[in-house]
Image 1 (spheres, protein in one colour):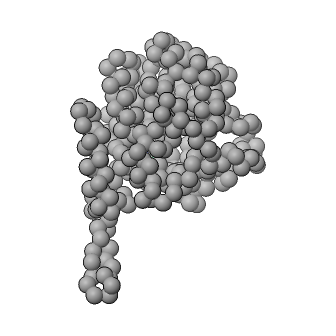
Image 2 (cartoon, rainbow, N blue to C red; image 1 turned 120 degrees about the vertical axis):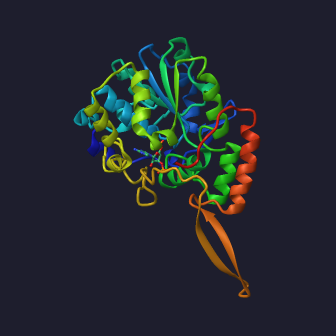
Image 3 (cartoon, rainbow, N blue to C red; image 1 turned 60 degrees about the horizontal axis):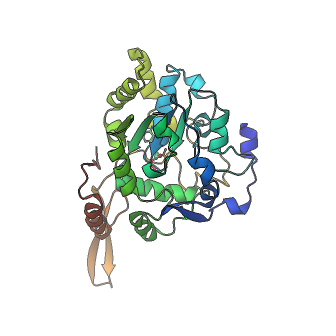
Length: 325
Ligand code: A3P
């Protein structure tokens, strides 16, 4: 869609902070659930590449890396369109004149690179049947939660997050769009041994982008000269992507995303659980008391509760995360 048209877009209020509905117990926006039959029956192709993630796990970053690989490091080619028009987001259903993921995907000549946040059990079965390649990227729960909270404040196409305290509870209970983080990362982890899935971690990408990009190259059966590899690393670094309007979502009108509330490219870090901020307050003016906050907004009490709940939900899985690099 041309940039001027996007900027002038007027959207009916019903599309903003949309109603939600469940599909097999997974919370989705009503626009997705109303269109579910078409999404479920989506026809994948053997040469499709699907980038799958839980929301806020580094999808856009991975999309940019993949696009740079597919275009042999040609930055101009990667700036041909917005991320969301380059790689159809298959379940994302939008009102005209915006492009819904399915429509875009159907119009796109193969080989296509597609995006999804669907939990593994809701992936259209044609992806399994056609044996399409899938890159799954996972990010640790706390950083996903914090990022998702801020994203939900600035993006009016997802439900209002409520307060931070409310949002932590919603996240733990999986009552956010695309459902439980815990089930999502575990579900795809279990699927990776049965299908052509490259399972990557955001934290590994932060730690050593070169190593992780090489994994993607191998998975895509591509080879690029060292100088192109270095160009890809540079162009897909947080600082460079933050300035790239074709990758940072700033071309959307503020009625959809308001970057003054919180930028889409917010911090791009793994903040885990380090204690960084000491806040002192007066306890009824008598004794000063101290509240420790973690770098990522959790109070110590919230952090402890979160960790306890996390242990229960992740028990029995071989999947482990690093929270800091
Ligand atoms: P933060 O909100 O923690 O900054 P998604 O694309 O899945 O919506 O994920 C968005 C998150 O990935 C945001 O996290 C964003 O800043 C981060 N991100 C995007 N591009 C990145 C990059 N090149 N390097 C590191 N993080 C990046």
